[in-house]
Amino acid sequence: MVNVMKRYEQVAQTLIQEIEGGLYQNGERLPGVRKLARHFQMSVSTIVEALKLVEDQGIIEVAERSGHFVSLKCRDDENSSSLDTVNLPTMSRVNLKPCPVTQSEWVMNLVRATLEPDVVQLGAAVPHADYLAVKGINKALKAVCNQYKDHSDHYDFAPGYEPLRSQIALRMEALQCQVQSADVVITNGCQNALILALKAVTDPGDVVAIESPTFYGLLHVIESLGLKAIEIPADPVSGISIPALSLAFEQWNVRACVLIPNYGNPLGHCMSNDAKRALVMLAKENNVQLIEDDIYGDLGLGNQRALPLLAFDREVIYCSSFSKTLSPGLRVGWIISARQQETIEHLQYVNSLSASTLAQRVVYEYLRYQSYDRYLRETRNKYRQQLRQVRALIQTSFPNGTKVSDPAGGFVLWIECPPTVDTTVLYEMALEKNISIAPGPMFSPRKKYRRCFRINCAQPWNAKFQWAIVTLGGLVSRQLE
Image (tube, rainbow, N blue to C red):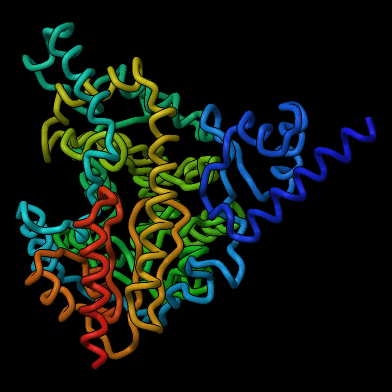
């Protein structure tokens, strides 16, 4: 027994040395158990025990039926080729004062660029079909058309198709949220859910606290509703600054706070559970309505799903959709609100009568008969590898002084260029070469972050995509000449 212990400990020590030495990168899958057994000339049981020991030290994680992966908590050493935490974007200083929002022109220009077939689409955060459940959705669509004759002869008025709401409630319960199907209202995507949430709790002229930088689509919503935004700085790792938010609550009559706690867009940060508890307590103390956008929640790069704010406070208004995972085109999202349910149902009816009857049945069919969790595991693995490769390519292609986010989830990267670079100019230069990016000022109501831009990495890793990244690095360098 003593000899066996020594053998698996020796294997574990060797594996740790190989990982720390850069043989396996963050998020990379280790060889299978049998392959490792042949490599070390040990029994399978010895390798299994060794892997358990390495896992106990937090260096690898296990994905069910997918194998062992180097943990993202295990940072590369100074000899690694990937960017480290020293090169993460800086958390900006913001003016804690409400301001009007004017983002329409920026957003519509970016949307129009996505319609051009020859443009490399790095601007809009829309996954390529390679990362979506295209086959499964098509199979579900065919089944709905064959089996459900009522998919097009009536409206599914709010709150929406009950079987789908039940499936969503089951998934929410698994995330420690006290949710029943009656609590779920189906919406036309997450953007529609955010509009309904803000309409339910604010009036024109009210102040809404947001992360900075934040998703430009949210700024578009705030602008359309006649609200004012107050920017709260967000850290690229830990998310929104609780002390800064507390100060804003003291100084201003903030009606709501809208944020993406899990894998925020564009930084990719994920708040800790302790920070989430502190946030919900702070909001309660100041009578501020928290509105959670959890659209990236299922796309964490780790193997454990981060809990939503709703798990810590039932009065959080929760918004999400399947647009970033299953299909953007189906436009199926949902909203959960303990206190505003009736108001939200009424607003949904007034604004759009109902979400698509056919789309709701297709998503239900997929969730019930396809393996959504297996698909998510495979997709997360793809994003791990893709983000690592893109960050490495940026390091070799961009000038010194460039900083890049290291997201805990999602599929976008936030790039901070050297101080003299203007990404609004870079945006125009890139479009001339048929490359679309999202310049930093889009992510701030005060048009901050002129040296930053966001790129969508959910694209095929092919010559055209790599050319676009290298070309962007060259365009940034040109501004430094």
